[in-house]
Length: 152
Image (tube, rainbow, N blue to C red; front, top):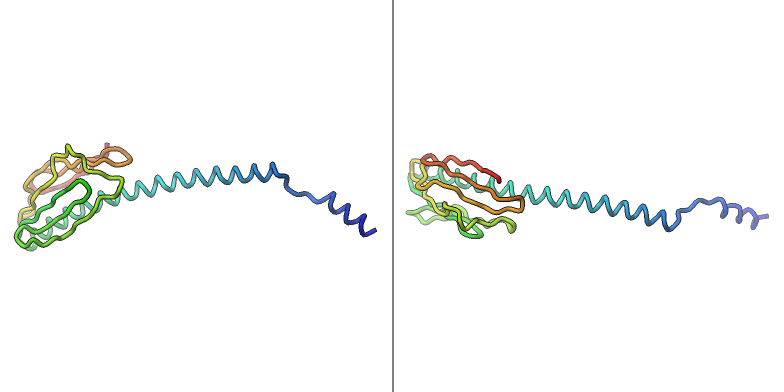
C-alpha cells in the first residue's frame, strides 16, 4: 500500500521541465542585460556631466581667488588634464585629469587663459571636448569670463 501511495505522489507532482527552466533563464538574462546597458549608459553620462560641472566650478574658483588675493591666475588645458595656478606665487590651486572617455579637441581655440585680479579673463573663446555622447563646447565670453556649455 505504501509503495502504491508513493507512486501516486510521484505521478501527481508537477515539476518544471528543462525547456521551461531554460525559457525562464533566458528571460532573466535578457532583462538583466538590458538593465545593465541602461545603467552603464547613465553612469557614463553622469561622469561627463560631473566633469563639465567641475571644470566650470574650477574656473569660478580661480576668478574668486584672483579677486580675493588681488593676483592674476592662469588656467591651462592639456590633452588629458588641466590646471590652475597663481602667476606670481606659482601656487597650484588644482590639477585634474580628464575622465578616460573625454578628450580635448586639438582645434580648440582656448587652451590657456589668465584671470586678472578684477576677475576678467585675458582670452575668450571655445574649449572643445570629445565625449562618448558627442562633442561639447565650453564657451568663455569676453571680459567677465561668463561660461556656457553647449553639447552638440
